Image (cartoon, rainbow, N blue to C red):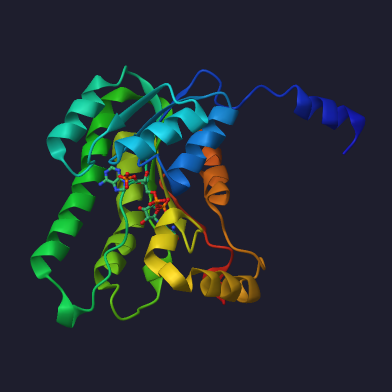
Length: 251
Ligand SMILES: NC(=O)c1ccc[n+]([C@@H]2O[C@H](COP(=O)([O-])OP(=O)(O)OC[C@H]3O[C@@H](n4cnc5c(N)ncnc54)[C@H](OP(=O)(O)O)[C@@H]3O)[C@@H](O)[C@H]2O)c1
């Protein structure tokens, strides 16, 4: 880098200066790191999560403007929260939730159906909100995943949902334009969710990924956050699904 470009970078205005970023599921992992990156780029952030203590710690950590503890799958609480946001909002990210793992033989079908309905309702309610309350050129960002792109025993329900995201994102982008809609699809990301799913196997999984991924390291939440912030800033991007998996799918 020359002295000139060094100076240009040093004086660059933060990319989200004065903007508001709402992260539904922002008290941990990918959502929290996106909030941190958005703050670094000058945004005000609003965080939600279920556990009030974890949320309060996260909000203090990143200097959130506001926090709201509720279950995003509770339609009344979600509607009340969205209705309380001062419009227009610039960006809304949905990273709340998690995968549904169960082999068909052991599956509680009613529970699986509830998971799908909760998941879809959250996306649709946020999309309906965005139609009137996200500014033109602002974004909706949904976090999906790549994990279910290859069949495995036990991931059918999550496979169904993740397979639907690219179509949903593209259709919403058309309907909600000029609001932009994009999907982020991570592979394995080293977050508290991954730790809780893998338990004692976490270190072995990290080692395996370091040895096999083309990037020779484990993807962290900051990697996904960098992509998320880019999608907020780059006004050319809408209707697309962006994988962030360190090359996991090409191995
Ligand atoms: N980590 C991975 O390897 C990976 C890979 C692919 C996709 N993903 C997806 O990426 C998203 C974020 O995952 P993560 O790894 O960052 O998980 P995480 O560390 O557990 O963070 C999830 C966040 O969402 C909140 N949350 C979860 N369920 C919620 C609900 N019903 N209502 C409101 N808030 C809720 C959590 O707080 P509370 O628990 O307090 O509510 C937390 O703030 C998830 O949808 C996950 O399926 C993750």
